[in-house]
Amino acid sequence: MNALTIRLDDELFAVEAHHVREILELVPITEVPNAPEFVGGLINVRGRVVPLADLRVMFGMKRAEPDEDTRIVVMEVDMDGEPAIVGILADKVHDVTDIEAASIEEAPKVGMRWRPEFIKGIGKRNGGFIIIPNMERIFEISGARTAPVAASEERSAS
Image (cartoon, rainbow, N blue to C red; front, side, top):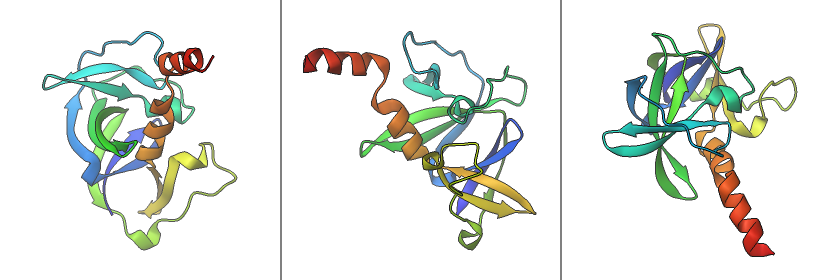
């Protein structure tokens, strides 16, 4: 698997390279009222409005103040069977690497500090571990029922 490696806090993550569209330096972020905490806001990518997600929040880490290494990884993921452009914050972008499929194992059900449904697998490289998040699942669950959508669904169900 070809993957872009990024750092969040002190953990190394690998995002499948075929999802990545571009890597940006930090740009102005527009906050969205009532958005889930996971959604850091909206950014403008070449005239297109793109939701920006903070995986640190999704994985139970504290938000970090951006620094000179902070980047936005713009990706295309499937949401409800449709391609969607999203951005994720990365503390640092490392490199594109090949992770041998044989070295990728299923995430253990116990002993993990993250929800296992958000982890596609754990890869091994240079004696360390690389977490491979399931981006489709993260955005499917997080984007499926935002507060305004859930509220309108509840009103229409009454």
